[in-house]
Image (cartoon, rainbow, N blue to C red; front, side):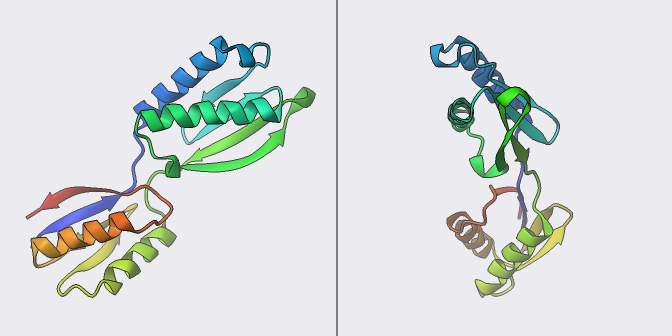
Length: 162
C-alpha cells in the first residue's frame, strides 16, 4: 500500500547561515552604525536586539531577506512582540516552529478526510503525519491539495513509498 509522510522541518544550517549573513550586513551597513544591532541564535529561538524599534524592524527585514534567499519558509517562525529592554533598547524574539503540533495535525487529518478520496487515510505519528492510500494517484492528489491549502506552517512531503 503506498504511503508518504507529511512533516514540518526547518533546516537549521540554513537558518544559521542566514543569521550570520544578516549579522554581517548589520555590522557593515551605514544605517546600522552605532546601533548595536545583532541577531542571536539559540536552540529554539532567534533574539533580535537593536537600539531603537525602527532599527529593529529594519534588522528583521534584513533577516527575512536572507531567510527567503536561502529558501527557509517564514512560516517557520513565531514572531513575538517588540519589547523594551534595558537603557531604552528594543528586542524581539522569534520562536522556531519545527514539527506538526497536535492542533495542526487535527486540521490536516480533517482536511484529508474531507477530500473524500476512497481508500485514503491519515494518522498522526509524533510530530508528523502518515498518509496511506490504495492508489498512487490518490496520494498525489492529496499532496497537491495540501500544497494548495494554507495551514500556517510549512509542509514537506517525504518518504513516499509504493
